[in-house]
Image 1 (cartoon, rainbow, N blue to C red):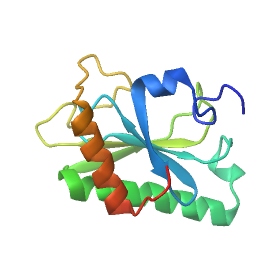
Image 2: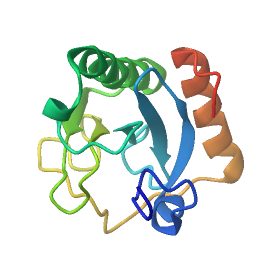
Image 3: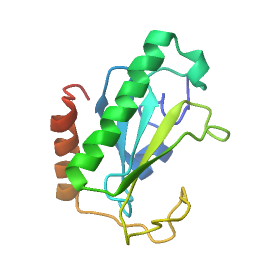
Image 4: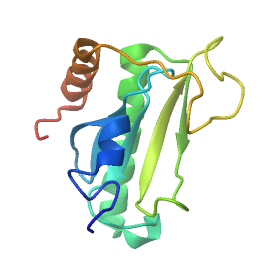
Length: 144
């Protein structure tokens, strides 16, 4: 769909806040530029659908496997205490799950999650590249 945050490959709003890591089975993985929650990312369904119920059972199974695999990879790679998942779609009607790692004693641990962080943590280009390479290797992502 034209001008959709996730469907439009050149969407400036998305490019401003996240990097595309690569295509999975049924989803596409993105890494947030704000790394206050180290490893925070999103898995968006690869086609323009807005609800889990819009997916066929096979698509839903593959998409949820993608979400679970990313959550497991983030936990393994960066040792977070807990992974929080969020599916927000009232303002952005494209099915996607936020994967938000929480670290005991860290930012927002034990509290709610704010979509927009008042104190963002930005990394160097090399650090982002390393994180994306680690995710790709752990998840066997070969396509971008």
